[in-house]
Length: 402
Ligand SMILES: Cc1ncc(COP(=O)(O)O)c(C=O)c1O
Image 1 (cartoon, rainbow, N blue to C red):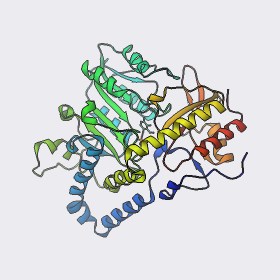
Image 2: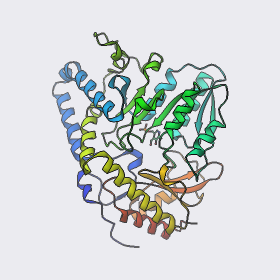
Image 3: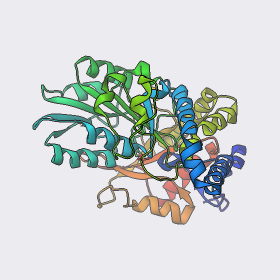
């Protein structure tokens, strides 16, 4: 095994990532460029230089401005989206606000993010609905398999579909356009969990037409942590109030801004991450010249890396290219981890990669019916193809592979 670590790209200078690690996990929490963190520091200094002036006099117009800019970026009117702290909070907010009748069904898939599945189960107990899981095959042959699995589980009691836009454990782009059209057309509300989507692929939320959409800003927009969006379609807004009530918004404002105004002040907090979202959108846009260039670059490296890894580990590619962006899974062998796959359970192979090779990359067990070990690569501008070759060599040395 080589003794020196493979180099990062020249874009690495924009990030403060530890050069003594091979960081292949932009997917989990993103990573924020140094300049954006400096901006956040300035926002905080401004807040702390006169907290009342900042919170009471200055913050509100900055909040509207930031969410209007985010709205432009994701194809939504600013008044139809609000900031929440993270995607988990957005999903909780919707389930908290919706009313269900006993026996109603909420449909999701076996690819759903663990925290969201747990949220569904918790609200199912409180609100007496049933959680129904559609088994989307993985490996998957085509995006049509997603729709087929979903449709097979629809019943007259299905009230809501919680569907990932980009799946976490399997790194797949689900065909949400077709899914939203089909389900909303049937009168079933769709909550899209787009935790990875903003910055990962182009978004047009008004056009998509889902009742509800959540997305993180810290992952692929690279904003500071603690900024996410919750979009609610205008005809659904009367049902959705904030997770946490606070002051009444009592200034005169245009009617169409009334819904989102309720979310303006949810108690004293550090809202600096929200205010850095516009700068992060511009910063990442300018990194390679434009967003589409960056997204294409990341996808190209990802496709090349997953091909290399699959052939060097003698495994086959688990999904067609059209379902892949900057994240991808590669099968590394039979399930070797007997513990359940939870947030705070690090897979032994992941631990070996971290300790012995300085590689930060997630290793998951998927799925319950046929558990096997998968590694999920993520590609951001700072990564290089050589880093994934190094990962492949490390996995082979560890004895992973089929
Ligand atoms: C699909 C999906 N949903 C939800 C989340 C949760 O995001 P957060 O921890 O920011 O709430 C993640 C995080 O990776 C995710 O991938």
